[in-house]
Image (tube, rainbow, N blue to C red; front, top):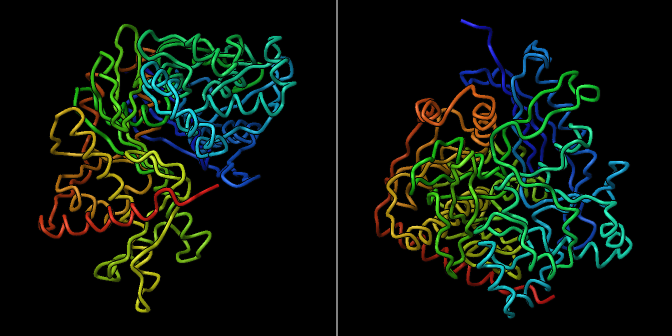
Length: 500
């Protein structure tokens, strides 16, 4: 046996930076996580400090390796996965951001997107990018930045600034400015990338008034994509050999390599992706996104995606703002302490609703309360909202492709909640399969990085995937339908609430 090789996964999420060290059998050796701050400078605005994102990410990597007692010289490759639509604009010469990172949850361009939805441009965007005209994606917010700080547009046109999603920013920094790249999965979330010809789209760049020279080069999701600068970071030139947006990385980590396989990740938001094979799926007005899953050499894979904006963030809100629980873990026991929600529904439309509604003016509400309602009912309703929103998306997906699914693969933080997973199986009327390793986002990045340096391949990964627990539906069909009808009524009341 030769000496062990290690893969380092950098997992830059919406609420934390995390590094996980895997061995060449893809077992976790060590990890470290640090929360990152969010700023809310105005109603609906969400920002982060890009420098903090970067320094935290490097710090977690160094600590994870210290914990493992392993040197950076033993790292064969680095995989990067990231919150996707969030972006940074920075000064090419100094490497300093010119504005806070604008985060995917940010709704500052909601009114712009609403106007676009009434115009031909929204159909062009749909056809070329597979996306809907929503503030969720980067393009309208990048245009907002240039319109509100016109001097930045001038500097961008002069080639003094660079744009990147978080993967691009991290790679640029740890490579000492040598690489300005992004992979197809992240590029496909900007609303500037043509998913048919796999190029930055000139017509859309003109429409949004974005100079092409600030955009990164598009690369594969696995391979020798970039290298760290050994004089600045980690003391060694290490290949950055895997890149994928967090949801695509989770699809890869769940080994969903066959057409029709679906995973749902319960993170800050809930994101469901279905592998739809190597040809761009028919683009229809059905509220689902078409996106690039990954590209490895000549292997190109597309996905259908449904996006729920508030999942784990709902549990965080109940903890931080309402103080109903002290930790996310407590929510399970509290929810189980009552037999049901007693008719309470919680629609967590704090920042509008995603799939299938795409209603930026929806607002959160809790309905059906009486004087007997207590905190346990509300917490339970909050957890159940994750399952209802997931059903909204899965129903649509199955109708759209005409595939009836029997099992949903799940992962992400809230998938550890057994109450939620059982309720999910009940409300779907389908099996819910949780893998042994629920950190599939980081695992997917590690798998891609491993493929990129020749440590593994997709056949071996399929064998590595292992089920941890399977939840089977126990609820009667009549009860399932009754509960789901109640949910739909609650959603209707939340829609179009905000009038600006």
